[in-house]
Structures are given as C-alpha cells and as structure tokens.
Image 1 (spheres, protein in one colour):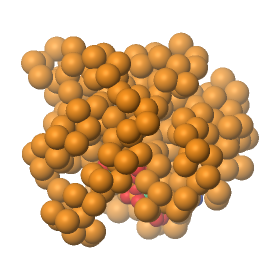
Image 2: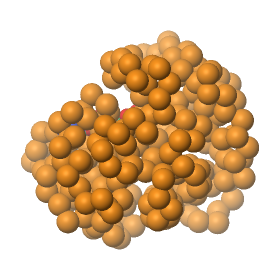
Image 3: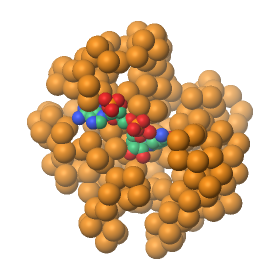
Image 4: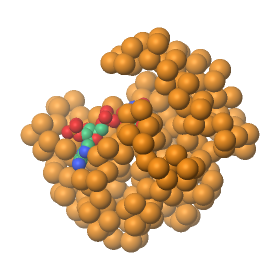
Amino acid sequence: MKIGILGTGFMGRLLARKLAAAGHHVKVANSRGPESIAADVLETGAYAATAEDALNGVDVAILTVPHTGFEKIRHLVAALPEQMVVIDISNYHPGRDGVIPELEAGKVESEWARDYFGRPITKAWNSIGMASFETQGRSKGEAGRIAVPVAGDRKRDREVAIALVDDTGFDGFDAGMLADSWRQQPGSPAYITDLTYDEMGPALASAERDRLPRRRDIAAQVFEERVGERSSPDVETVVRIARALFM
Ligand SMILES: NC(=O)c1ccc[n+]([C@@H]2O[C@H](COP(=O)([O-])OP(=O)(O)OC[C@H]3O[C@@H](n4cnc5c(N)ncnc54)[C@H](OP(=O)(O)O)[C@@H]3O)[C@@H](O)[C@H]2O)c1
C-alpha cells in the first residue's frame, strides 16, 4: 500500500521502518522538513517528504503527532479524501499536551480527533508502548504474539489497519466502533500491558471508564519517579507497572 506517516518521533520512526520493511511504499514527514529526518528512519526504504507530500496520493495516512501538533496538520488531514484510511495513534496526556476541556469532560479521545479533523479516524497502535513496539514484534502465528486493538466506525478501515498492525509484528484485534475506543485509552487494562489476542477481549471488556484518567496520571508519576522525565523505561518495567496499575 501507499502510506504517508506524519511524525518521526518515537513511534513514527518505528512505523516508517517496519512498514517499509514489510514492502509498503512509505513517505514520512516531521515538522522540520525532509532534510531533518534521520537516516535510520529511512534505512528500510521509506522516503523523506514534507507533510503535504507525505499525505498526497496515499491509500493510508498515519498520524503519529501528539495533540500539541494537531493544529498545524488540521487543514491537511481535513482535506484528505473521505474514503482514505486515516489512522491516529495519539493518546491524551494533559501533563504533556495541555488541558483539552472536552477530553477532561470525558469525550472519547478518538471521537474528539474525528470531530477535530472533521473526517473518519481509525485508532490503532495507541496502546502499545514504544519499547515493546520496537522489540516485541513476532511473526504471525508465533506463540505469545502481542495484540493491538483497532477501533473505527468503518469496517474496511478497521480491516486495513488490522492488516497493517499485522505487518508491524502484532495481532490486530478488532475493537469495534470508535465510541468504544475509550476501552483502549491510557489507564485501561489493554493499555501498554502487552496482552495476547486471547487476553485482549476480556481486558477491553473489563475497563472501567471513570477510573482511567486517574490511573493514567498515577502511572505518569510512577514512570517519572522511576526513570526521570527524559529517559524511557524498558519493556519489563513498563509492563510490570502498567499491569499493576491498570488491570
Ligand atoms: N511513545 C510511545 O510509547 C507511544 C506509543 C503509542 C502511542 N503514542 C502516542 O503517539 C503520539 C506520538 O508519540 P511519540 O512518542 O511518537 O511522539 P514524539 O516522539 O514527540 O514525536 C512526535 C512527532 O510529531 C512530529 N510533528 C509535530 N508536528 C508536526 C507537523 N505539523 N507535521 C509533521 N510532523 C509533526 C514531530 O516532528 P519533529 O520531529 O519535527 O518535532 C515528531 O517527529 C502521542 O500522542 C503519544 O501519546 C506514543
């Protein structure tokens, strides 16, 4: 498929590497221009582009930009063809992104993104931590393969996203409509807990909506206390803490 990725940060660079390695035609952009994109992002065959070029003529757009960067990409995403699959991997962390009143009031994050961009959005890869995403991918059918929930209002969008999740080394799990995607938001049992396909359904079903924001914020404090603001925890630490707090 032809894929355009916005963002070359922790997740964007891994998605560009993995999807290009899987044989897709991948264009990737950050906020600073194609010349600023590090060589390792392009190592497996992705092409550096401007944000406009990255989204031009592709089948699938993947947004790996935090909410703080949404304003600058709003017009580009809003102008994409209605039928294009647009996958958003973002999560709302008020301590990082600033307070968004509608999300504080409990609006489902991806429904907010859908309304913000004024077009259908599919949610995927939001619930896999970057350390696991980088190191824990496995071949289809391999025992213990981690599942990644995919939510969206159009069946075809979910099918496309599930196939792409598979190409990145994880089992795509059909998590249904966007209205239910709060079940995979930060603080939920499915969030960065590295569950298998068989474990994912019960985890999504057991989420308790009112408890998610508090658990999300407690987790942010625990991670910061353990590893500091500038370092990234390893897989074992992330999963151990996340399972203790979210499940
Ligand atoms: N890190 C994780 O473990 C993880 C896992 C799943 C989901 N997420 C979620 O995914 C989102 C991205 O996370 P991240 O950790 O990958 O973020 P990040 O490392 O901060 O990277 C963000 C990227 O977005 C780019 N960007 C910002 N504005 C842009 C614009 N106008 N046009 C094009 N690119 C733009 C930035 O460009 P520059 O490089 O030029 O600054 C940067 O490359 C967040 O909402 C996060 O919560 C993160």
